[in-house]
Every structure is written in C-alpha cells, then in structure tokens.
Image (cartoon, rainbow, N blue to C red; front, side, top):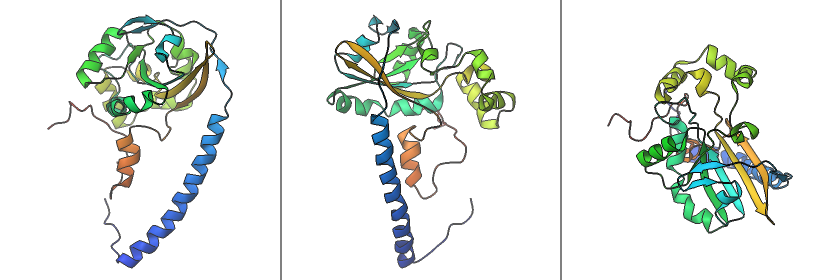
Length: 245
C-alpha cells in the first residue's frame, strides 16, 4: 500500500469539511431512495409455499410469527455446497442476532433463507451459534420465483455469472473450495434481502435487492469503510471458526 498523505490539523479539518459536504449530499440522496422504496407497489403472493423449518413445515404467512412484516436474507448455501454456506454471507449472518429483539419489537420478523436441506441449515446454525430462524427453501420454487437463485439455464444467460464461471479470479476459486461446490453450481445462489408484508390475511411481496448492493456485512461495508486503510480490494471472507488463530 502506498504511503498516505501526511498533513496538519488545519489541512485535515479543511479536507474533512469538503468530505462532509459530499456525505450530506449522499444522506439527502439516501432519503430520496428510501421514499421511492416505500412507494413500491405491493404484489400479492398467490402461490402456496411450504418451507422446512426447525419447528416443522410452515407456510409463508406462518413465517411472520404473528407480526405484519417479514424481512429475510437469502444466504448462499445451495444443495450442492458440501462445506457450508458462503463465508461472506456467514459474516453477515454473524451480525444479525443482535438486531432480533429490536426488530421484533418494531413488528418485524427477521429470518434467513437458504436452498440447502433443513438438516444442513440446522447443523450450520449450531456451528455458527446463530439464534435467528433459519428456513429451508429446498424442493420449492420459492427461490427461483423470487430471483433468489438461478437455474442452470438462467446462469448461462447472465454474462457476469458466465464470465466468472469460465474465467474466475483467484479469490473466487478459493471461495469455491471454501463452500465445496463447483462455480457453475455455487454462483447460482443470489445473496439477497427480500421483504414481505401481511395485511388482512394477504401476504404481499414488497421489496428485493440482490448483490452487489452495498448493504452487506456491516463490519465490511460500514466499519471497515471508516478505518484508516479501508476495506481490502478483493472481497475475501473467512468463517469466524476458520481464522488461523
């Protein structure tokens, strides 16, 4: 890494004020985006889905657990993954438990989805020490219907995915070994946030955002962004029980 500019307190203050103007503009833009997000139309979910959970089979409505809003993160953990979920998604999952009580008291149920069978999700959840509900979409069309996963045919039609499969960078080859799946299978899972609302007995799909959205693991996108050296250029990640020390 090249040496960083060294300056006086006065120079820092002037540069910080200039940065503050940009941050204020970004904050205003974020408010505009939030308003547009809330104005998205709600789409009734008319198809019936049956999900495997730790407490048995549940419908989409039952996943709300009595609340009116459901927010879910789709963790990359496909049926073909032999070594567990995506390390980056796992990093994000590590930060969710602290939000559970606060979201629950604001009428929001927070869960995670993955396409691997429930037995493997339950074992991985225990390994990671997670508390949030972890729901399997295995043997359902849910992930494909809502864009949380791609079929093999769809993956071949997405240029970015096809390029990464055919000419993967070194870090992505490492990722493939970490999850224990070939890239042609591993990259068909879409790390995504998805939201639903339940009103007068009807469930509505309200929002979806798929990577590369900046809303990823908070320590990466928020905390490291504010450190002196910033986040690394390559999006490498490790599970918390796999660091060398």
